[in-house]
Image (cartoon, rainbow, N blue to C red; front, side, top):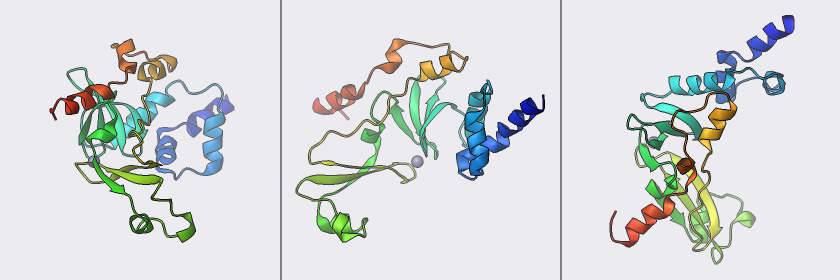
Length: 194
Ligand SMILES: [Zn+2]
């Protein structure tokens, strides 16, 4: 009984808030991760904490990066949304393609962001791409890749599975949510669309 109570406290919403902020004491964080059985509602509590921190009403399904969420809109679509409210399209399309991009291609440009001279990438081989939210200009990602390498699609989360495994299956489950639709967007570009 005492144990259960202790576990309940460890998984409190306040501790989840601290965990998200990175201010939870490490030993408490470890206890939280090792708790058995896991608190059934912890996932939903975590989502609630995230939801309380944003100013828009769309329901958060998952967070995929510090400032990026997959949300469900009223029309049933699942889109990427930045903390600032800017939307970056269907989550099955690489959100980076909706960003403002800055590409660093020269040693001088690399040196602006990397101070250790010996660790500068070789501009004959690689380029650095910085992706910014078009709404708030927060830097959302950086990738250092071989020249001409396709824009990396970092994550296509299996959201249906996450919710099913947490015991809260989503009403709109469908295999279609796992289809990478990035080519649909780049295909439109090829046709001269936007
Ligand atoms: Zn933003």
